Image (spheres, rainbow, N blue to C red):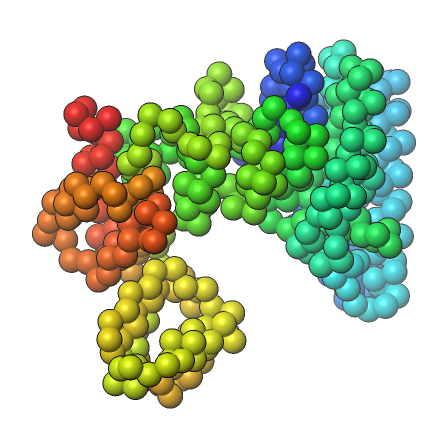
Length: 455
């Protein structure tokens, strides 16, 4: 049994749905459960429609919703070759969802505001539409697809826009609904990122919600594997736009994958949580390269040994340096300092400290002026903008003493501002000026992945 998530956005609608059908057909013997995100841009369209409703603009609402409906009908007609019985059945489902969203938008217009609960209800329609579209398109190719309401499966708390699944209730619901379908050789198809509260309100799971839903369902069923299909080879030895010789990483641990996700890989750490807890492998694959085995993410990672797995980069970083004699031997100073970051909701990436100074990096310019003003009460503050974090990500980096030497040898002649090895030994980060970061990535990739003796 596998759970398959489709969350890529490249290519046309018809091509994307057709790719998904072929992928599922090739995995029929593995008892797939399919999770799908909305068609590209539909979520944004639905948000725009809700804003138009709030702004009392019924003509714009009608235009947006009409375009969303027509787009799904056009895709369906092309995929099912205008066979009247399939089209008629799909259009009934389509109009049912469109009527639902019109009712919700009328309520928003009446109230003149969009509540978080109402917003979740609106944007959930995108995934509902795409799941019905995919299921009916699969049926025309003799795949016994069965659309399933995600609200029947995933129970959540009431944090609208970023709800957390209630796993005990979810596990019971998933098994009660999906196992009988699988026993009858059906292929369940569900919209991602959707759940419901105990009170019956629709919720969404936030960013990368389709993949998160897939991991939740996989954990609930004890699946053999969760497959995340996206539109790029997202887990590679470095960004292929920077190094043409970058290659797919065959195997990673959950911890290594989470580190890479922090550097922008199209896989959110939150997606991995249910799989980590349940010990279920996650495989990341590319819809444009379906023959590739992709990257397998497991609890143990690569059994062949420790060492670097990838070179990652994050640009647009600001270094914040705070120096103060008040730090020397004073209890609670660091708590006060990091309390300022917490109050302003500013996340910190790299941290280094000395007896009288603290240096951190941030990647969010929001509130940075207020941050500087508040930190001035604690010490002398210096900001250095336009920096990049270049990181060697792998396992047991602190135990491999030669790795640090090779990093500094590869970066010889380059100016860098900070060096930090994570306590977990998963990440050796070097902060360099943005202008030098591409060259730094290329040099480190050559040192660890392109020398035949090091592969």
